[in-house]
Image (cartoon, rainbow, N blue to C red):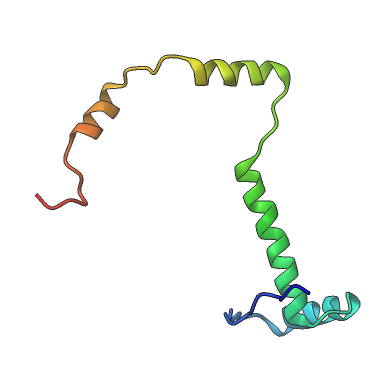
Length: 93
């Protein structure tokens, strides 16, 4: 038997009475507590949002252009070179 992770973190929300009633109705329809409904919904949206940043699809023509750009020799960008050679504002002088 697998042990469920201990949920010991709390997240507080401020919402309108209408939003709360809407979430309660949706949770009841899904046969979940409001906490379960909100957590599952938020995690699903977070997964979807983060997946968009990790994966993307390209057609064959764009894939070739993307691959060529990755394989190309780096361009000399004087402004970037100067930036990397300058002192960081976060380091003490």
